[in-house]
Amino acid sequence: VQRGDTAGKIAAANKPADISLDQMLVALLMANPDAFIGGNVNRIRAGAVLDLPSATEAGAVPAAEARRTVTAQSRDFSAYRQRLAENAPTSNVAAASRRAGGRVQANVEDRNAAATAPDKLTISQGNATARAAEEKVAQTRQAQDRSNRVAELSKNIEELNKLKAAGGSTAAAPSAAPAPA
Image (cartoon, rainbow, N blue to C red):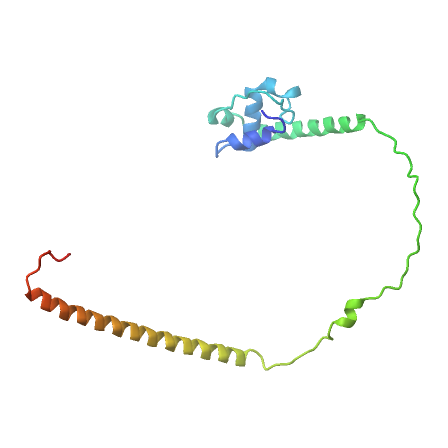
């Protein structure tokens, strides 16, 4: 156990999926009673070496009992912390020896108000014209894409025909290397 570690963090990191956090905490406490100050899962000793309980050991703790135990120990730990806070030494702070003086003015000038333009309301006919323009642009792009595709396909067909014609003339002549499959 490292300084700053909590039993909850250790239990959460090592608990099986079908076991609740409360069951794992109580099983951890039962497996390592000397690792906890006052037998409280909230007061784990730094430097303690823990034996992690197995899934069957953790599952042997009834869930309702584990929840009651953890709730009771949380209340005890809260009371312990409250006692520590009440017993903490208090220190008296000397009164400040400095004084400040001045005057508060209510007249504040907003320089940004004059610089900004007044609000302006514009009434339009809605999004119908904008949509029509967008649709026209989209249709133009589709037509251009189609024509580009047709041109590309025509070029590919042309190249295939050239290859076929070139392949037909080389097929008649004997070849030194076999053609790839």
